[in-house]
Image (cartoon, rainbow, N blue to C red; front, side):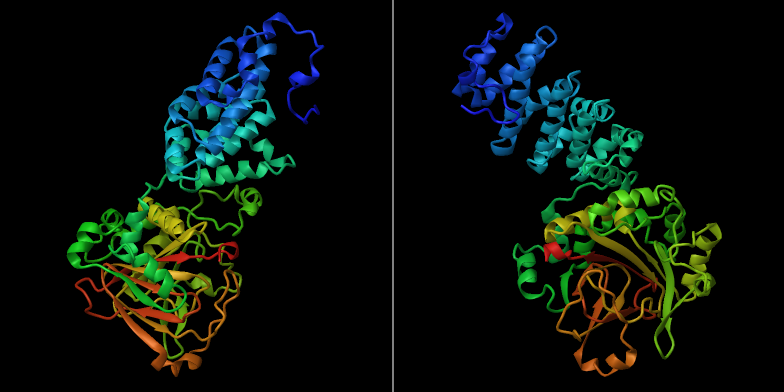
Length: 502
């Protein structure tokens, strides 16, 4: 019988080998018997072996590794009771034997991806998470990288990210910074783990059930989302949700966000408080293979104040040519780079002044800044099977227009949170939908002025949701007297269809 690489010597080719007495244990009988495929047997043998490992390391270590491998395989194929596995994981992870600790981390990673429920059970087990974080600092590189991969797997859920952070995993990963400069593909996992953990550090999202997100955007009918995908998606603009005032106040998924802003004020006084507490949300490459390079480049910028154009814009569209103009004079400076101007306290105060004279304040990256928005964005991403969903907020004064007429390279859901806003959406001018990250040309107004017959007008009131496909020209404006306050507040959620997911 041929020996496979990396396997134990089988019984058929060791008949003449002299065995030590301690190796002739009942464990070896189970190891080669058919009953060893049974989880209860694996569990019992593993518990017993771990308990006696310090007395018989040479004979029991191969057995423990074999049991651990079988346990990992059983998780991938027929998940056993998670309670039993959780009882084992801390002991495996804290083992002084690198081979055992390594396999413990691998089991955590596999368990984290079995299902959302199992992921939550693992990450809420304090002893397991503590042991996993300790393994990150292991002097054995194989153990530390396996622990890093397990952290990455646990971070696929917001519950996982939140609990992993609470055990100081971010600090432990940063301490391993030297690993960044080791040429290894798995270094990528370490960088991505740090990125995922830090992105929502102090404003972690609380998961929303998928049916709640679906109902919030597509109504209470079970067929709402299906009908939308079959008849509207990337075909035409359309109302996709309209709640009555009573329903909005009772059921709307945005209510917690609105309450945190205190939008009942006549003037949106919440603007300054938002800007005062905001930090820069640095853009990263669209593909996650660029995470390592991104972290190296951005390491000295993380946590800095907001940056104009990158995080915030203050602009209006005015005049016969309907061109955008910015409130801040530094935008007109020929030396100005859109990612270079850091906002200071005086600039923040001037935003309120700009609002009073007709400028829209646009905030990007809301999914990184507010718990509730992060949860809604995560839910939409899951619903559409996309890696992520971006969210921007627009605060527009009465009788004003913010962005000029334009189209996007991604589909947009406009959610009216407060006040009233009118939208004009034009027929698609090209058969080919724009691809994500393609350069977009702003068509001259003269090209679309004659397309009024191909234009649909939508009036969005509090609780309404409008869908605009990518490639459809659109513009939005407020009118005086539409509501008591006169201003409009809305969120846009961008469904960025990455090429592999089309």
